[in-house]
Figure (cartoon, rainbow, N blue to C red):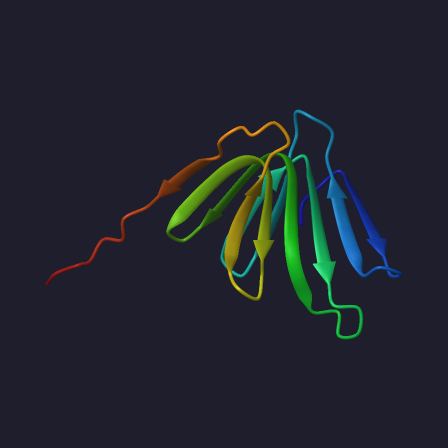
Length: 104
């Protein structure tokens, strides 16, 4: 996590990272790399194991084979899936990358 501010809340097992615009937070977890105005890591209360990463405001998240840009993006860590949430029904931008196979 790279940010201007970092808040750890033991009571609800969350970590919140914030940066003042135009700077963005940078948050990565197991091959998923995201940038946004704010990031929230939700964890299991008992084990502390990460459950979800939420990127809020100017969110841009990349995985090995895709990139998603939206107002808000939720990464479900267990399922390894990205979801987009918008308040004004703006269509998210999704880019898929073709894997290249080296033939020898």
